[in-house]
Length: 217
Picture 1 (cartoon, rainbow, N blue to C red):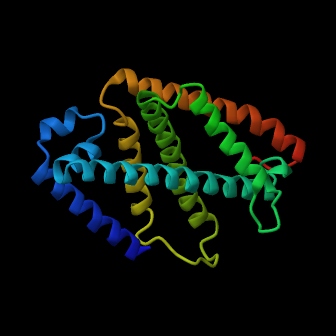
Picture 2: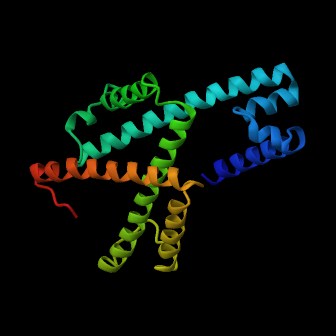
Picture 3: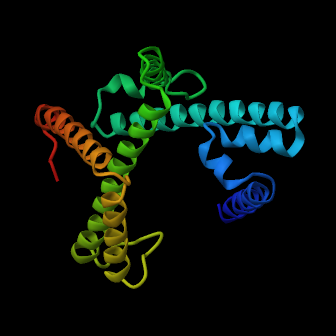
């Protein structure tokens, strides 16, 4: 993982240096596709085509990894009884194909209904980021609770300097949630959607866990 992060850091640094040296910042800010602009200014039509191919491959790989990752998460949740059992169905190669079909279908619907415009995608990404950051805060709270309740439990990794690290993590994450958007209108739209999503999850989770006779905490 460290090697992967280092490689990404080097690649991104080279890209930023290239932007700085070959692309005027004003043009970069005004462009709807800055990577295409950069490729064009750097290598002409060849750079334009090259960047277009890179962008297509990046989108395909991102969508593929997201579908696969979410499918395995759904299968894992089904395994512990948090989702219906059909999410765990796998083919001969161990692929949770039902989960992949459902998640892929949802993505197709998003594209077919026009929700995949730049503005809407940006809004959904911001909303998803807030939900994930709230989940991170809950994880930090779990760390503090488990450290107190089960101080001697065996752990593969033990967070140092607790509770300082968790408190700093929660504070930093809360700050990012508050500054998720530069304008208040977008920010509160994001919060509103997140509240709706959590309400939907509660409406699903409470009767489902009661039916499965599973504990809430």
